[in-house]
Amino acid sequence: MFEILKSLEAFFNVAVGYVWGMPLLILLLGGGMFFTFYARFLPFRYFKHGIDVLRGKYDDEEEKGEISHFQALSGHLAATVGMGNISGVALAIVAGGPGAIFWMWVSALLGITTKFFTCTLAVMYRGKDSQGELQGGPMYVIREGMPKVWKPLAAFFCIAGLFGATPIFQANQIVQVTKDVILRPMGWMGSNELLVNIGIGLVITFFTALVIFGGLRRIADVASKLVPAMVVVYGLSVLLIMLLNAESVLENFFLIFEDAFTANAVLGGAVGAVIIEGAKRAAFSNEAGIGTAPMMHGAAKTNEPIREGLVAMLGPVVDTLIVCTMTGLCILSTGVWQAGGNDGISLTAQAFEMSIPVFGHYILFVPVLIFAFTTVFGMAYYGKKCFSYLFGAEHGHLFNYWYVAIIVIGSVWSLNGVVNLIFVMYGLMAIPTMVSAIYLSPKVLNEAKRYFKDLQNHQKSKF
Image 1: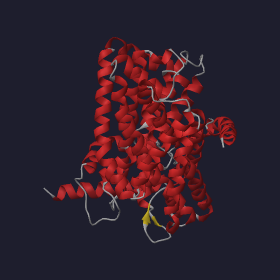
Image 2: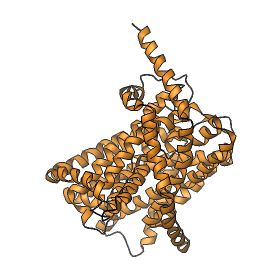
Image 3: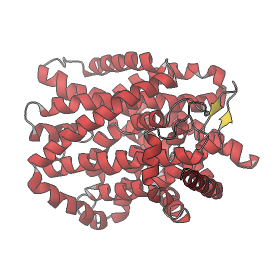
Image 4: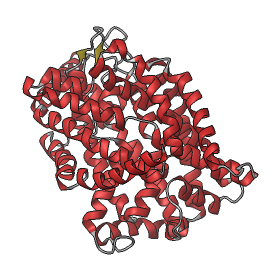
């Protein structure tokens, strides 16, 4: 099996360079710019209205869907606010330098409008699965909203989604942080690291099975309770580290801007490589344009697609502009990124331990576990929807067995192999998602005009 994993790692190391080339960058960033200007910054202008919708001001239990606006956003954040924000940012800094964070910000700002369009479409073009249940996502948008000639793109998205919406990265990093924080300091590693990795992988598998076999409602319920609390705990911890290293925070904040246009810190002037690294990590972090968010938001209980688009656009704000920025400044201000030898979760753990001796890595351990597990739970829903579209909803439960089995593979595979597999699949998923959103963008704008006109008339009638 390990020879197969080595061969796959070599393949994905090459494939990621082809997939994440200039065409995909133009599609994601250029598409985001197109949405932003085409909509005349509409999501930014109605930001407060989006928060009101999220708070439940417009909730109606009689409307179609499975989960509330808040549960939809929490469920998606459960799958995005996680290891991409903690170890993913560390990987971005190691690979692309501090400047990669700036391009993550740019991607996130464009991603706000991208998510507005893609998630609005997910509700506008919901379709029924083979069991007659209402579903949302790029595959249904393509099937219901585009000419039949485009239908193969829906299957293409789902095939990539089967391998992209997997828990292997989270499993890999849970194993790593458990060894770094608990087992090694306690002297419990033993001589056979492979058995330790498999053992931790089986524990992850057990807890994952308890949740995902309960379906979407259990995933959304668990996520809506855990994610907000862990964002606060992690945020306060990082703020403490930034306060302890206050003298270097401002200096490193400006270094992000400087390195974004010089790329001197790591890549020796290769600015294009920094932009690609930032865009990749932003896509990994907030998944704008990838197509996972529309699958979760498409299940929201609403008859107004624009409302769900406005709720979805809040994702990149929380995920990338807030959480990723805090992680990045934490790593940069402690200087651990310059030492080399560590990446992923180990680098973030080192920043915590340096700033808060003895307790730092334990403080990080709890949010990391919660973030990683909630991401694992959320990804299961995405993968199952892709499987059900391809093979029929009546067989959807079979996906859960594949999903929990692949956790063990993630626990023993290399970080490099795991990350590049996800990047390749995310890049492939982005193609049908962005193409369909651009094609149907006039429909979104017409719906927005109708919605805000009705909202304005409703507000006038109250006076």
